[in-house]
Length: 215
Length: 298
Image (cartoon, rainbow over all chains, first blue to last red; front, top):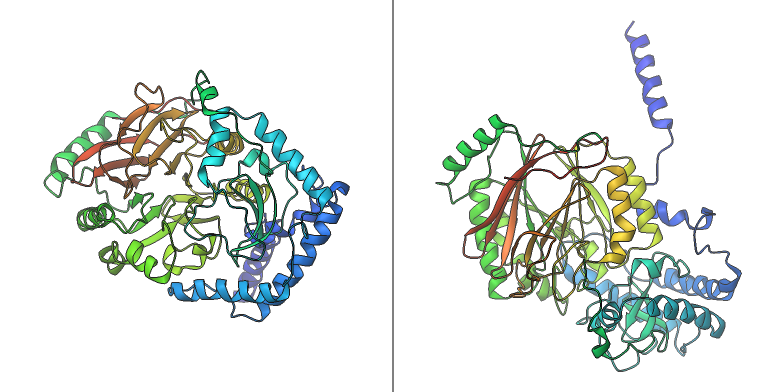
């Protein structure tokens, strides 16, 4: 009798466990990238083939460098977090010594992505254009293989624009630094590449007057 | 249309009123302090290491002693400026030492001033993720990274939200979808991405920061929005006068919130650095099915 009860319980447990489970972790979502045919910016988009090849090559370097530094785990000691960030950046710098602007954003990719950014920017209200540029008002061009300045905020990239840009692996992200669009290695806090002046210059502030106020 | 919310029943209002009068003697806590309720604090734009942050930290501890909240949600800008190890100490560990010592857990969202690697700092309980979810009592919390709302995050959010089974669904992140702030205002781009999911899957309450003041926005599509971004930084006089969005706002003092969810009732109290209650109220949980009607606040 007891055995029969156990069998019934085990069967129910198995059935419950077998039902389709939605992706609930970031890693699982990351793995969805290549599978989503409805994505507005699929990995297979031929316009960005060369760019994705370069991104994949960079990720190989990143992954190889990761194996040479301590694993990044949750810790109550912030020294371990910043220490690992720096160690990873140093390893990548060694691997990518001599890297140049345009190595990842190839000229054709830079043109395509620059067009997407400019088109998105130009249809935004003038006040929003200024807000994008004002968040990180940096005049000096970024430099490849240098740290993203830690005392500066990370400019918010509008979701509407992100949905139009080629999707990046989880370890990389687009950010604005002044008018430049940078490719940033998140775990290493490193500037991997950038498109100079990707964001058009905003109209003068006097044109803001008369614009519809935020709701 | 099925009513999304009902006015607080008379007996509940009376109970709350009695609770208020009794609680008034205990450090001015206006929450009902019901048995088995879930209580938490809300702070935002905190990581300055300056005096207002420390003052709010002390005031939070005073309220914890009476309201006995067990966790705190942080709506971003957890560490301003440099993020050296000593900054984590000066801008987080020391100002909230009493709370940490009492076992209060902090759950952080990332702001535009935060290095995403903060997710590996254990006291922020982010589980190594930029966006994550956790459950407390009968509430599912969805913590988003509004600095970088890409397709992956949206996809994760929809799947996780769809899977939510708790009575209450609350989201928090840094940028407010609705705000009367002169400096930033409503984040309409972000709203376009998130609001349809909030409405579709029945989000109840949303907390944000970024604007350095307190604002309770009139319910939008049946959802409550609170901006609590003045827990260290303060942008005085920054709430747009006459804004149709504002139900209640305060841009004069630093503030924090204490929330108590007792079954289907959400109770909140917003307290200033000086210990003055600047806003408080309660509303009943909306029904999941059907679209919303505005919810009554007292």
